[in-house]
Length: 90
Image 1 (cartoon, rainbow, N blue to C red):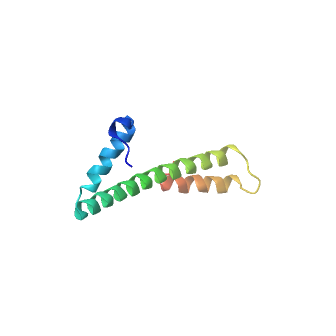
Image 2: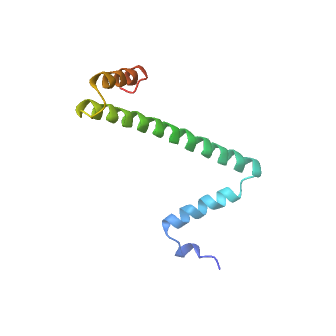
Image 3: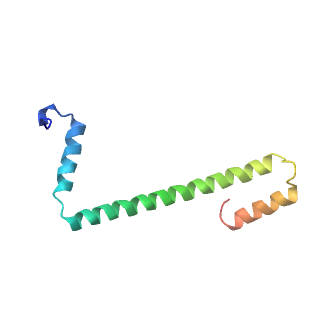
């Protein structure tokens, strides 16, 4: 048996209203809605990932410059910094 509307919380009422609106959509409207949401999620995820990769690369280069890591000489570190700068990571 369905919950009575007066027994629902405010959050449950909002969710119920959204569900009713979605059930009233035509197939075409529903497909467009879902495709738009997917595209938005992909775009946001791509942009967040790109920003995270840039920050991670910057942190890695800074760590290389600060810590003298055995086996990685000053020349190699300078080359890495130069390449990172050319590709916009610094």
